[in-house]
Image 1 (spheres, helix red, strand yellow):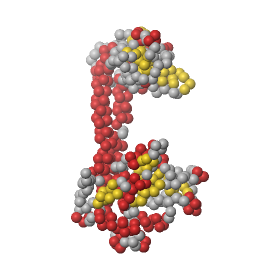
Image 2 (cartoon, one colour):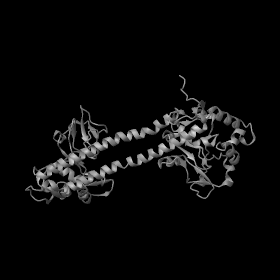
Image 3 (cartoon, one colour):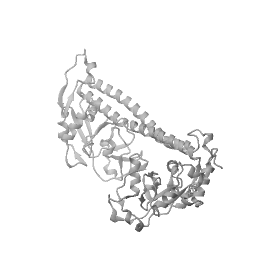
Image 4 (cartoon, one colour):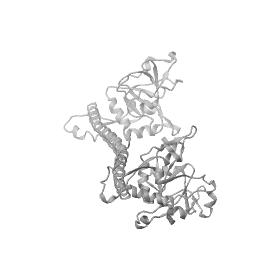
Amino acid sequence: MEKDVPIGWEEIELGDIADITAGIGFPKKHQGNSKGAIPFYKVGDISKTVVRGDQWMTSADHYIDESILKSLKGKLLPKGAIVFAKIGEALKLNRRAILSEPALVDNNVMAVIPYCSNMDKFIYYFLLTESLDKYSAGNAVPSVRKSSVLAIPFSLPSLPEQQRIVAKLDNLFGHHDSLKTRLNRIPQLLKDFRQKVLTQAVTGKLTEKWRKGKELKEWKMKMMGDFVIKIQAGKNFNCPEYPVTENTVGLVKISAVTWGKFNPNETKTVLDKSKIYPELFIKKGDFLMSRANTLELVGASLIVDEIKFRIMLSDKIWRVTFKEEIDKRYVDFFLKSSIGRNEIESRATGNQLSMRNISHDSFKKIDLNYPPIEEQQEIVRLVESLFAKADQIEASYKKLKVKIEQLPQALLAKAFRGELVEQLPIDGDARELLEEIRKAKAGLEKGGRTKKMKENDEVRMVAEDGARYGK
């Protein structure tokens, strides 16, 4: 099936408009050298550039003295060369960057060098549409072949149209980055909102208006132990590390209660039937809490809202039973509040941050803001209502995030179908540009420039840079 190429565009191969070259072995004696004149980039520098949101590689960790350039037997790449990882896991990350000045790259990097220097950004954007790992070969460590990159199909518009496409993409990608920055603030804003709700809930501020005109008992400072009937822990024994099913019995892991909602997949499977204790099965409505975890997660609690499998308590997960005068949902909110977290973390013991513990006695000594039961129930209602609204916002945020993450590829696809900017009669035809590139590439005029290119100062051939920097 023939590709539908826009009017005035030419269907070519990448090798018709660019050279492809790989880097050289990095000289270890220059590791960390910051005094040389020539930057030397490693494959990891590409990832650093992309992760910080840049297109251009502007600073290196390693530099080479110009005096030893020839001894390295490597080609100095010109400004505007587009670089990417050509080997291993870094290749699959699909990251690209553009050299902001002449530089060397190591042998895990491949560079695309446009013959026309004004095409660097256009080719860069095109390469963002290509998953180059599909052009890799080799069993042990797959690597991209130069011949495969040279043969990548490429739709070439005239230079003026290219420049308008690049300007439009630069503008849209700038707005996209700004939108992503604002969007990325939402999870922290929601976290702060929930924590503020919990703090107001357990200090009485959330129900101030509700209390007015009601004859209620005063809030009191109590200890958790005043309301605890029983703390039950489970067993600890070796089990296969795969989740419980309908036909098996599971042993709960601390990660099942870490994130506020019970996760039955965070379990191990009990094969020894002699170690199955029905009295330890977790039930709907159970108040569960981890007695051991990192400092930030020890004491994580939840109330089981649904349970479909037979899952036993482990030695690190408690089931706490409370007296009727306290609502366990209020206790759960209190322990999740900053006040409750301070109580837990200040009482947790252990020498390692990776594993802290809280004992029965320490848990029972937690100071608890205790409102009357009617107000506890109102607090629970208000918190659940506000959290439900936050959950709706979070769900919308996640859907929007997916769309925003897909937007760059949609824009790029539109750009390289010729649909992003209007075609103008004065643009000319891509055949003219291609012919000039071919003539210069073939060396039909001394100095690498044709008469047409000399008349057009916007077109400067990388061949000139090659003559200056050498191989």
